Image (cartoon, rainbow, N blue to C red; front, side, top):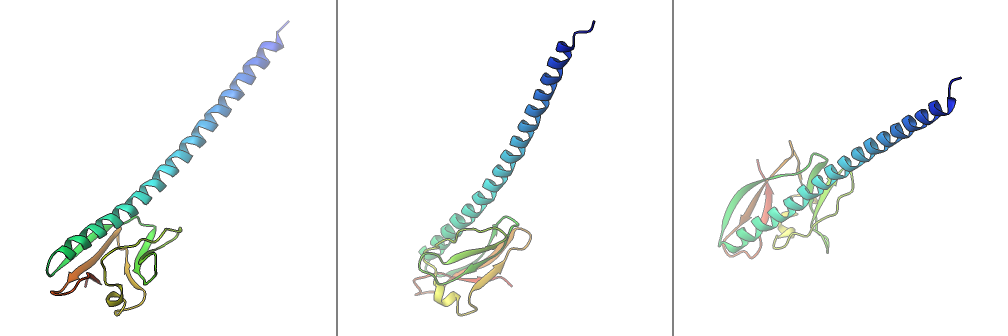
Length: 145
């Protein structure tokens, strides 16, 4: 006689192992997705910090003009400058992204060109010109040509 109980225990062990493998693989994909999303958020925060740093450097000079290039994730279609109380930089994206407040920029002068003033994200790069003329107390931003 063949012992059927041993065969059943082996089957249960195999099924349980397969279920665990599927759970671990699903968790790995979830963790990788979260990590990639966090990387995009870090790039956006780094862009904001770099832009603020460059604006502050330009503000401390008497006058000047400098072209700057920044890297953004490809899900950001463009950046736009607007005149709002708590934010003056917004991101046009396929997913919602919080706006930022960039200090020491002349939003009114920037918006004279167009409102909202948008700069396209081309090949994950945003190029803009930071400018401050002699006697001005704020920095203006314009598009590169």
